[in-house]
Amino acid sequence: MAMKATISEQEASNRDVTGAATWLVRVGSAAEPLTEPQIYPLEESVPVHLCRHEADVPQGTRCIATSDRWMSSQHVEVCRTGEGWRLSDLGSSNGTLTWGRRRSTTLLANGDVFETGSTFWLFRSELIGAPFERGSKREEFFETVSLRMKAVYQELDRMATSRIPLVIRGPIGSGKEVFAREAHRISSRSGRFVPLDAGTIAPKLVAHELFGVLEHADVQERARQGRLRLADRGTLFIDQLEDIAEPVQLALLRAVQTGEIVSVGSDEPEQIDVRFIASTRCDLKELVESRGFRPDLASRLKGLVLAVPSLKERLEDLGLLIGHFLRKVGLEHVTFSPAAYRALMSYGWPGNIRELMQTLESSVALCEGNKIELADLPVEVQSYQPPEAVEEKTSDEHRERELTRLLTAHRGNVSAVARSMGYSRMQVHRWMKQMRVNPNDYRT
Image 1 (cartoon, rainbow, N blue to C red):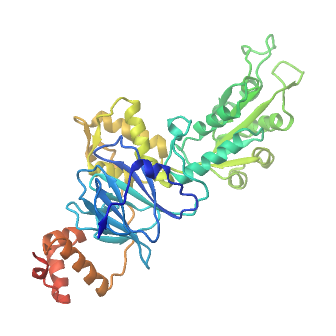
Image 2: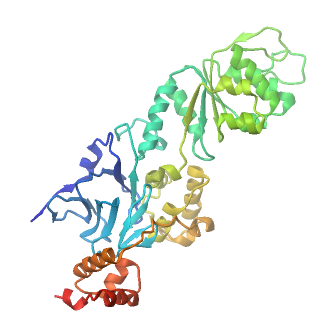
Image 3: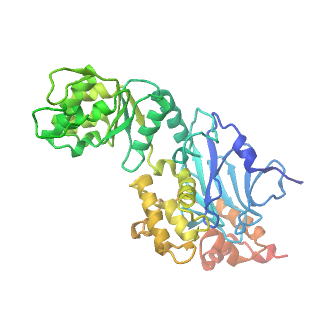
């Protein structure tokens, strides 16, 4: 007996996934890129069907409904088996692709991406300790459907109000300065947020840039406050620690140690109240051991460390970031071909969010009409080879069960079975001959 057990988007948003080990994320849609992503916790004892609109599903099965017109009424099943979490196409018209390759069935690994129609999904299987919450008061950059990012934001909230120095570690283009600005905003410090690109300071101007120049000082330099004085009662953000020259390191060490500065042209120290936040692509230990960074300065700065994930590690946020970009530039009408969206989901993004934004900007400029095609993307994104789905050693018994299931679903249509399995008709005929399976038995 069939029953309706459809999970609506609102219900999905309200579910608490504290302690859940496995969940699905509907990342986005090529045809409707402004569609809000959703997260769906999975239960080991309850199979899930991904459906177009609401559908009658077998008793004890959940239906996750979408409005994707390219999906079949019951497109694919996700269920727990003795081998792990298995994705099985239910005889859909357009098939199911895992990492861009058509599969009738596959075992899902953490982080696997699959698509149904024009909708892209991501499978997660991780231990988590915090409930997922939507509706943050943060700016758009900080909205997320990644539970890993949610944990980072909770750490940021705890660290922001402290006066202890904070090091933000993350790959290039991951938004470290944005995190630093958010930490300053949350801290409610009354002073300014002052960025310091210390790698660009000429050694002879270190004191001038950091401590300032006293008016009437006997130097050929205009009076200036200096970055540390500008950041008094606020935050000094030191960008890219690994690029800081030795003289700058020494000058910063004295300010961090004593909380005092002496302007050029003065002998009188001034007390300052500055929160130091620094960014780096490297671990502090690596900076000291391999890059010659001063260990005493590293020791002073390493009070708190916030690790920012790469975009690859928070891939479920890609659809959200694409939607934000399109809204920001007023291109809500733009869509993607499935091949273009698939390439964006498959690419490794070594330049992280910065590279994604640059890719979208160039693709919008190059596309004809309102649809971004694969050819509009940068060559490196087009040609990137996604990871292989987990290859299984398929037993004859398992393959026979799969053939039988698909022949039943497709009513003996061998061409449709071959498309679902991702093999040629000739190969499917060979298997049927070996297993003595007759497709006529399934035609009604």
